[in-house]
Length: 176
Image (cartoon, rainbow, N blue to C red):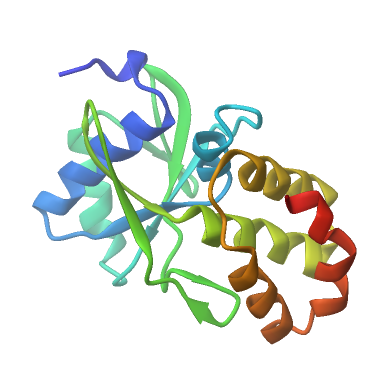
């Protein structure tokens, strides 16, 4: 097995997911580290957001993480052998009011990575742009849309449901 200090974002996520899954804990990678993976490192996040899909008791997650050599520091788990840190946001796995059901599975050296789709990643980043005017998240959405197959029709429909169709129309060309 690959050592933690040699694991990238996808490998560390899959490693942790595999150990949690053995204990009946279902987590999916979301957030900025998904941008890192889908943009081929154009954007780098050191924070791995593993969304706890079924509200498993945090004590159970803590127990697994400590067995893996992680330490809990506030809301994050850190490990001496990596700069990456892990957070377990509570579910549901959603973007705004929309529950995410399209989970992508990718085989990596350390196991099966369960990750939100490129289309949902773009929606996630655009949510921050739409609601908080976070231009860095707009750039992240662009990186993913330019590097991956993204369903822009679905992004448009979601934007309309979010009441942000006009804002989507302003940036549509940046996502091609």
